[in-house]
Amino acid sequence: MKLTPTEGYIAKHMAVKVPFLPVRGRAEQTLFAKMIASGPLLNYEDMAIRWCKLVNGVSIFPKLPVYLRTYETEYKRNRAAREAAKKAAEGSKILTNINKITMPEPSAVSEVPPGAAAEVPGACGGSGRAAGEKGGGRRAEAEE
Image (cartoon, rainbow, N blue to C red; front, side):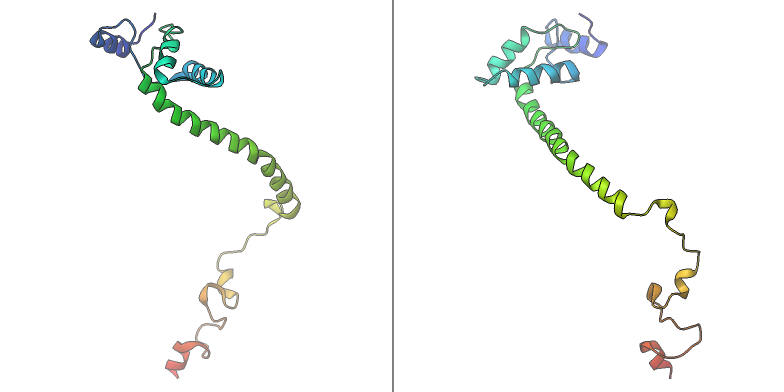
């Protein structure tokens, strides 16, 4: 068994050879998924006992039933996210193709020179009149 200093410390203070830790790492996540997929579980206590038979002290550590129960929530959320991404992948491909057809290439879009927006009538809340020109709007009426 290869325990890190932290794992050794935990094991020593728990008076066990290998510490009980929450589900972590790829190997434990894969084992959890296989156990869930293998069929209906009687309860988390039985799952924890089956888990302990597979402990190697390197990548698989023993689990308390509470660790398996709390990890199941995370597992279900992650699985749902993967399934949603898989379902959305085809729609994403279709949208990408539509965008390629309907949207101009970024290099084809002409840049607006600085200050050009001020010359466009109505742009940025302007009246479209040159500076000092009267007419239009409440401010102009108040000045008259």
